[in-house]
Image (tube, rainbow, N blue to C red):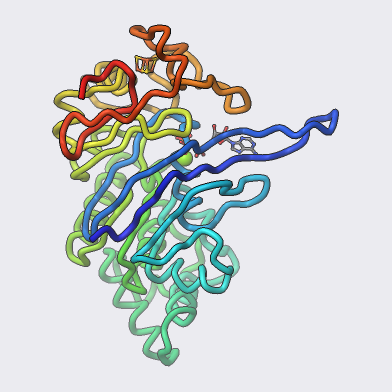
Amino acid sequence: MSLLVVEDLHTHFVSRDLDNRVRTAKALNSVSFALAEGEVLGLVGETGAGKSLTAFSIMGLLRPPARIVQGSVRFAGQELVGLAPEQLNAVRGARIAMVGQNPRGALDPLTRVGEQIVRVILAHQAVSREAARAAALEAMARVGIPDPARRFRSWPHELSGGMAQRVLIAMALVNRPTLLIADEPTTGLDVTVQAQILDLLRTLVREMNMAALVITHDLGVVAHYCSRMAVMFAGRIIEMGPVEAVFGTPRHPYTQALIAATPENLTLDGASPLGGRPPDLFALPPGCHYVDRCPIATEACNALPPWRSVAADHGALCHRVES
Ligand SMILES: Nc1ncnc2c1ncn2[C@@H]1O[C@H](COP(=O)(O)OP(=O)(O)OP(=O)(O)O)[C@@H](O)[C@H]1O
Ligand code: SF4
Ligand SMILES: [Mg+2]
């Protein structure tokens, strides 16, 4: 059974210009995917494609002017879109957890790190403070923090970036979530620390049999850590399938360009490696969003492309892909 089902999700930024006219940036446009229990799905795409917004939409963490205008997010059979904040809080941080970039910024600078983990436990579990403290120390040891009893009393500014990320991973996992969303969890860390953090996440995801949505610029991370991948472009998933199938036989012209552009290190490096600019979200073309950059576009591409399946679990959003 699917643990997470995202269906036809549309998230827009609705604002007004200086002449008081409504302006709508269509940042997510019919995003659909499912995640099975224990499955690790990679979400890739150039900067601004809508990866983080997908994560925030699932977590119910959008702030105005962003809002979900259509679609559904079902987690373990429960609809999350439109859920009251207190009901959403019960799911978030307990059954779904998120680890982002900028770990130091995510910690409260005025609270010792151990106490921050204890508070996350007490918010979701009916246990004593002593039990929460013991669980926090155990979680700190599990994520590889040396001398947890001493680190428990550290202030966030005393931690390195890698150590702060370990604290955040401990906070994310301490309530034993069934879904982990990792949004660029190693951006900003040293290369050697990046590898350690990714290995730690992979081990924990396996040991705890969590499903994970891994958002990354780094195609190498997807190749090593994920079983399936989804490629986003301008707020749409334009290709999805098993990692070997998408890397081996990419079907969408954007995925083909993406993979061909990064043969050595498979890294997107943040910006588009392919030349060309992302389309204007305030004035998206009516058909395929990739039409202005696509080398094989035809007249037909001015109409919305269909999702073409090339295998049971591999498909692409393109007029020119043969089913
Ligand atoms: N207030 C806003 N009004 C209009 N558009 C916005 C606003 N805030 C963000 N956006 C747009 O939403 C889009 C989705 O951004 P998102 O952060 O999800 O991209 P991303 O794929 O995570 O990129 P990155 O790889 O850089 O993290 C971006 O194109 C961004 O320009
Ligand atoms: S639908 Fe047309 S423009 Fe879009 S990727 Fe396919 S061929 Fe290119
Ligand atoms: Mg992002």
